[in-house]
Amino acid sequence: MKLFHGIAKDIATRRPHYRSDFSGIFSQKVLSASFYLFFACLANAIAFGALSSVLTGGEIGIIEMMIATAIGGTTYALFSAQPITLLGGTGPIVIFTALLYAACKDLGVSFIAVYAWTGIWAGIILIVLAVANASNLMRFFSRFTDDIFAALVSLIFVIEAVRTVGGGLFDDKLTPADAWFAAVLAFGTCVIAFGLRWTVRIGKRPLPGTPLLADFAPTLAIIIMSTFAVTLWSGQIEGPAVPVDYAATSTGRPWLVDILALPLWIKLTCVLPATFAATLLFLDQNITSRIINESDAPLRKGHGYHLDLLLIGLFTLCFSFFGLPWIVAATVHSVNHLKSLSIDDLVNPDMPSLAVVESRISALSIHLAIAASLLALHFVAMIPMAVLLGLFVYMGFMSLWGNAFFVRSLSLVMPGMIVHGHDADAHVPRHVRNRFTYMQAGCLVVLWGVKSSVVGIFFPFFIALCVPVRILITRYFHDEHLNHLDDYDHDQRNEI
Image (tube, rainbow, N blue to C red; front, side):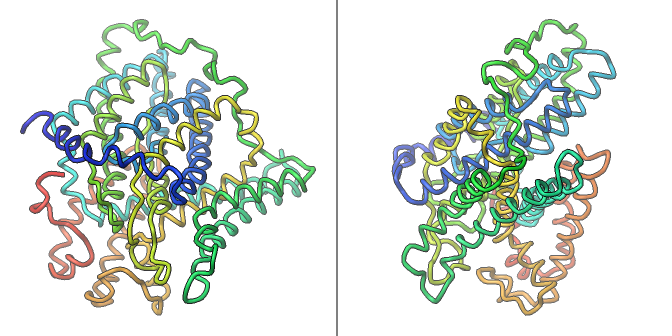
């Protein structure tokens, strides 16, 4: 094992392309992706920031999440080996933070100080893992696991958004008219985005202007429904619960955490939760990176798991001193970013993309815009929350479309459905394909059950258990069939 070998290799792979990463600033794909995913990443920061605030007694809230997303996302866009991957808060990390808060409350110790020490140790562990080339372990993962994980996260986006909108119909704080109008806003945003997105499929060849409409579909949907809400509705419209001052923390505490306030034994004991946090961050980051890097999209500039993990470790270490939330690669946002930058075959839109506009500009623009929004929080508060929830539903379904597991699952309930662009359909018998899909579905059900239970924090470890499951099922399938259904061949991928 050569220390720093993976990081040095990642830098050498990406360095020749660095200048070209900043070209195409006025590309239609870059502009549309920047506008669309700015709203998506902003909504993600607001949603997870609000949830963190509730679960940590206000210690970590929206303002901290927005600042972490802006700083981490901008830095990552500039220096990462795969800038198509977008950073943000994730559900597992928020759950872990909530459990840490509950433990600190029971023990009567300062949560924010324990959180800081846990993050410091976790950051150090991640940096050591990056230096030691630990991301090479991802060669044991395959599309079997990637598709299950991506489907899980996408379904969480869709179901939680629908649940939030539906819950408003039974909320005594809203009048029935306001609640139903919020549902209309969410539904309208989703329908308009999908409708404009699929205009390129009208006729055998796309009509003039439809590719432009398709690229800007989510942005136009947000503008249309937000304008509709502001101009035509006089009732109550719930906006994001953003703070009024970006310069102050959620609780008014000093930005720099007093890490010296804890006794030495607590500082050292924080290594235990830090080990779990590091495992959580390692899996979240690397599985999402694998989904992007091993996708069907024709990426040309290479990638770098080790360098990107090093950045995540540095963010975790540095952010912890200020009580900022830890961020990693966000699966749904990253997949939608890749799709937004992909150039599709307009004649055969179901086939794999022809090319990808590989640029740092869109990711950089998205996170700089989030930073700028900190100076205009009153404008952010004007965007109806229902519109952002409708965007979440759209993103969840867009992330699912193209997921081989999800597409095969559709063919189970709609046997006559033709799935384009997947080798398995032409080379694998239907009953074999269905058996493979049932096994993935079983893993997904188990993961969902774990996520929804009192041991939900352990679900990343159950994701890792999909690897031995994938190895065990080889006895039930011919190698030729598995070669088409999956990409598992760690003997040919000793390093990544």
